[in-house]
Length: 168
Image 1 (cartoon, rainbow, N blue to C red):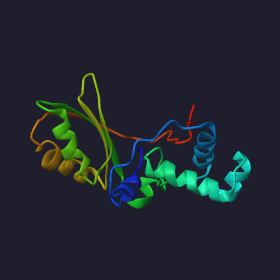
Image 2: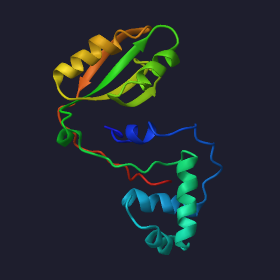
Image 3: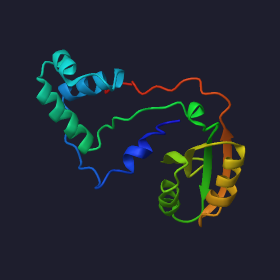
């Protein structure tokens, strides 16, 4: 699962984020500090990167407003009652963007990418149970105009999920 709780934050976003300029080394170090601990106080981050608390707060605000980063709570879906996760490969006939637009609006979809290869779209979903997954597949996803076929990869066990890959 990529970001189950990002949906809660994204639903509150009003306008599309502005395009950021180049990210300097100090901003990259701030991002890395927050990737290690998203609750780290700005004063502590400031000491680590050589800025004041106010300067860190301002940079974090700019980084979130421009869409460079999000600060969200990442949860374990199993502990929240979502016992079925799956990745769904979708083949599209027609405009892939139209199908992607429809999938973006589905609450069960937490990750969606347009791809090149066997599938036009890859969608990660979280459902309460197998019945919920069946209903999502048959009653919703396959009913979207332009969906030509799907292949479902049910998650048996989540072995690794990290968000601290740094800024390179």
